[in-house]
Amino acid sequence: HHCPWIYNCVGFANYKFFFLLLFYSMLATHFITWTMLESVTWCIYEPSAPFMRMFLTFFTVTLSFFLACLVTAFFGFHIWLTLWAMTTIEFCEKRLPKKDSDGSRGETSVYDLGFCGNLRAVLGNNMLFWFFPCDRPPGDGLNFMSDETRLTKDLESGKGIR
Image (cartoon, rainbow, N blue to C red; front, side, top):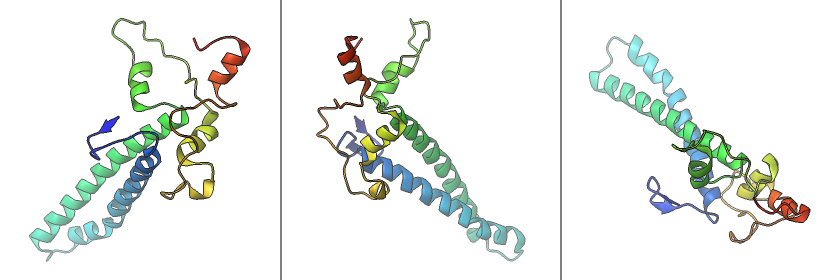
């Protein structure tokens, strides 16, 4: 789907890169927040600190703290989506309670490969490249049938997909 925050569409071909963008943004904002605490304490305990320096220090640490909280929550949500083999749209359609329903939640995705398999499906087969923007996940983005998916097991057992 189209993500207005990065002004691009996020799908099979670039979801790993979006995931890594969130991961490294989270690390950077936390790094900025926690390393600025020394400057904040200097501004508090230094009586001759200029007003503009104090203002910019407090403004920057406050902004980085709130960005760190937001990006961490957003990254945590995408970790949860990845572990449960869901897209954002599937989450909105299946997990959020409908107005006219009883509030029951749907079952797991038919493409669920388990936690480790779902991570491999997003980040690639080689764990050494998981945190680097290379080694795309296997597949073409159109066919997701494998021996490990619940969909394949349901079809083999005669249950169908419903």
